[in-house]
Length: 378
Ligand code: ZN
Ligand code: ZN
Image (tube, rainbow, N blue to C red; front, top):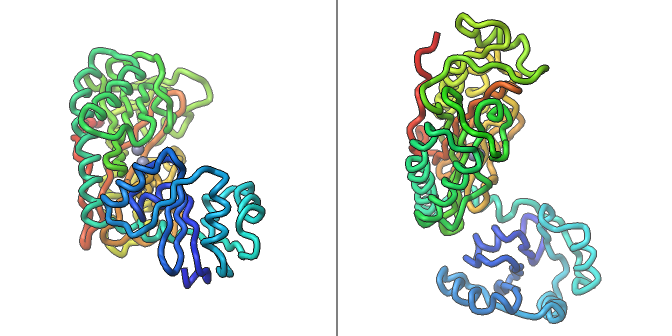
């Protein structure tokens, strides 16, 4: 706060409030003053907030008030404060306007960024334990549902089964909307599970994560439905194009065919290269480079359409960013994903993702589900 030259800070992002106090409800702000902190919430959370703060031992006073009383309380607390920091990335234009009119008269509102987020990047043992539990739940759900894939369920049925399994295993719920993308749908990185039935010989992308005690896990596996197929065929025009013919030769197939085994093998190799690059002190952009080089060497550079990974914690996407444009440096205790993918519009796609803890000389994967072999690659 001193560096940001503010005497007080209003923490309004709920994940930040939870990180600092343990409060898990859906409405609260934490006012951090030099003389102490005050959690301002409403009547619905009076009991829960008091219990949760006792549970974590956070030293903050709880004020559960009606909306009309908020202004008076904040005005009183801020009397004599010249500069109040706001979380610029989490306060809307309308909020700021309202604050200055309602209770911040005479106090200068100052934009701050990432003050709490920077504290959250390095996970402590308690956080790591929760994330390991979240990863174990996803692993177990994946194992429970994997065999069903061979029977031709729909994408939506599979997604529902994964979500139900994660809850049954004790998760708060899924950490994000589960992705099940089969055949040509797998070419869309964030495909929403549909009524499409999984067909034998296809590659299916399953991207799932659990939330346990607030903390997320994130894992993607690309698996075969039934026996590994050899060739995916383009079903819509204007998709795959000549890059495929050059980069992923379809063994003995005509134009438009894609060697699915080769596709999976390239992504596997890329992910392994990424994982091998993760360790303390390495620029995040270097991990991205390691993944991208393998895919580029296979002639598929243009088909890896997203960054390599992201930090995970109370939020499913948080700092650091693993991308070519990232200036973040990985450090011990950071938890990040490594998730390269290749997407061939209208035909097929593959992505493999693990959530890993950065260590001094390498990384440790929290997600441990088996990665499927590509089969015999020509
Ligand atoms: Zn994911
Ligand atoms: Zn992810």
